[in-house]
Amino acid sequence: MTTGTVGTSRDGQRLADHDGGHDAGHDAGHGGPGRAPTVAGVEQVRRLVTEVPGPVSRRLRERRDAVLPTGVGLTLPAFVARAGGSVLVDVDGNQLLDLGAGIAVVNAGHAHPRVVEAVQAQAASFLHTCFMVTPYEAYVAVAERLGELAPVDGPTKTVLLNSGAEAVENAVKVARHATGRDAVVVFDHAYHGRTNLTMAMTAKAMPYKRGFGPFAGEVYRVPMSYPFRDPEGMTGEQAAERAVRSITTQVGADQVACVVIEPVQGEGGFVEPAPGFLPALAAWCRDNGVLFVADEIQTGFGRTGDVFALDHEGVRADLVTVAKGLADGMPLAGVVGRAGLMDAVHPGGLGGTYGGNPVACAAALAAMDVLVDEDLAGRARWVGSVARPVLERAQAEHPSIGEVRGRGAMLALEFVRPGTTEPDAAEAARVAAACHAAGVVVLTCGTYGNVIRLLPPLVITEDLLRDGLDVLVGALGGAA
Ligand SMILES: *Cc1c(COP(=O)(O)O)cnc(C)c1O
Image (cartoon, rainbow, N blue to C red; front, top):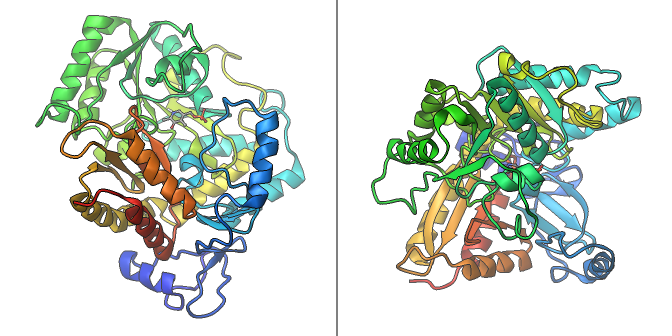
């Protein structure tokens, strides 16, 4: 589906220089030399025609506030009318640059034509049967494909679900059955969802947990490897020893069903553990009959520069949870695991009415084809190679940036009070608000709320990426 734009468009030309010919656009649509490519009819440029949010969005906001509970969050109150590639078009006609990708969901970009086509074709055939009642091929094909891609030694089996939280819940169900043990080990700064069990597994009280207890039992939290905040020079192996000490003293290895970890933490602040941490932890699990469960819901499908983040150090998991990037915008999640473990559960013990919906499965199959055919992992590495030097230069000039970190197209700035490691959430919020006013969607995260995270669609054009970085750097304050 990529078009012959390399060498004719500015984006294609520059991309070809950088990464050997990846094409930024999907569906032709060049208006001639000097014009940005279009995706799903949306020109890949940021362009404001009103303030953000504009008057039409503001009226919709009033209707929203009248009928929605305050508990439903809102980052940027510009209502979306359509989207393509890395650009959201709002109801006032503003073209916003999306550096959040719907929280790491549209890795192949908004409305990727192959995904849209697959969804339309499936919707025209049938929308639902309930796979547990009368099955269909697409679910099986998604399981086959995930088995090939996931960092789990084969043979594998896969159950499909609707949300990331549901996938995590099901991974724990499988782990308890397969081991006959109860305890679940999670980490500081972890995020695993908002259902009762996954709230217990999530670390941060506000806004995810406070007042929503009592929480599920037998969940134990141990220290994460967090190089920026760990003792200077602590290696990944030492951080793993610290975690294991905490497990053996709090629980006892023979009580633990599974250790559940995000290979790079998402909502908790894009915390990338020190090299050696994950391999050491996985080895300890193997030696102690504990299942190693990788929550790759945010890190999967090319985001970190590998198809899965565990691939970076060649680590293999017993079970992997997937969602977000799996279906490029359709709700679909899954647990991929070693067949012998997945089969420990009795017939009927796993499932749900909508899990593996056929339209979502069709989208996932197309999205996984795009992942491979357009080398989205390579695209993520290219995004990192463009963005990191810009962010590191900004760090040298702005002492409010304590650390630039992340891998591939999962990048973060951690804000601190200059000269300290004391978190500065107000500065992160101020910078994010300035980006939003300029029409650039960025998200914040972190246990201390002091991290700005960048999760652009992996198909972003170089012009848009550089434009977004310019806006972000321009919003930084307190230059040295
Ligand atoms: C988003 C996320 C979840 C929860 O997924 P939902 O689809 O929102 O339920 C779980 N784990 C990680 C690492 C996530 O990023």
